[in-house]
Image (cartoon, rainbow, N blue to C red; front, side, top):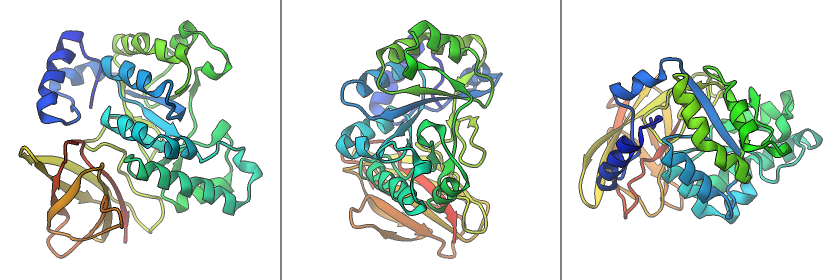
Amino acid sequence: MIRRFRPLLLTALAAVLAGAGTVALSTPAQAASCQNGYVGLTYDDGPNPSTTTQLLNALRSNGLRATMFNTGQNAAANPGLVAAQVSAGMWVANHSYTHPHMLNLSQGAMSDELSRTQTAIRNGGGGTPTIFRPPYGETNATLQSAASALGLRTVTWDVDSQDWNGASTAQIVQAAARLTNGQLILMHDNYQSTIAAVPQIAAGLAQRGLCAGMISSSTGRAVAPSGGSNPTTPPPTGGGSCTTTYTAGQQWSDRFNGSVAVSGTNNWIVTVTLRSPQRVIATWNASVSYDSTGLVMTARPNGNGNTFGLTIQHGGNWTWPSLSCRTA
């Protein structure tokens, strides 16, 4: 859970992580700065070749994590930037494929917009999103049903930065100052004024005892980040719920171990999505299968409990896999 760090601490931590290659988690000292809770920083409409890298650099250098609501067409056109979002510690979510007015579409067309985006993000190394933000915030029961069928929770926002409406950097910072525990702010990937606001947003959150959190796909609210790379709560379908917790294990120069603990059910299906060029070379305590790319592994119970493990040959990419869980 990357928090708001002092520059010296961030520099030192970056040096450590260069050797370990993993996303930093919170320490007890950092946790004290989050006494007033967590807020969700969100950025829509990426990834964009002209701005995404700048935005990621600004967020990382200020110790912030955010949820990136990507459009499928941009993710398909810029898969390397999807991977960069994950490598920077961000969460990747679904914002439709072409950014239409979704309520003007048939339910079939709605589903197509969402499923194509899921595929584009997954192909870019962004895992399988569990959060969907409808374009323009327009939603209804039909759209939410289409989203739920794909394991997506629909979320909008509590505070609108108005960056899309020409808001200045100062106005964006003022909007972020209204955030309270659990709330989400709407911002966008492609405005320089928004990127310029990042350092001041970070400072303001730290002053108010707030930290940047992830969006829970069970509540739609900002919460403390979990150990994995992406939100890992289950789709709302399937007759039950389960959650996953990823714990890093032993590391070697060419590979690393991890374990996945499942709670909420004994009859689970966990999808593990790797980042290219990673591949799984060993597993234990689960029955597994793979998709045609080898990057998506599906694990099921094999009678050895609700914790299973895997060894990943990283190929230079140390990023932890993203996880999603559903009941069988």
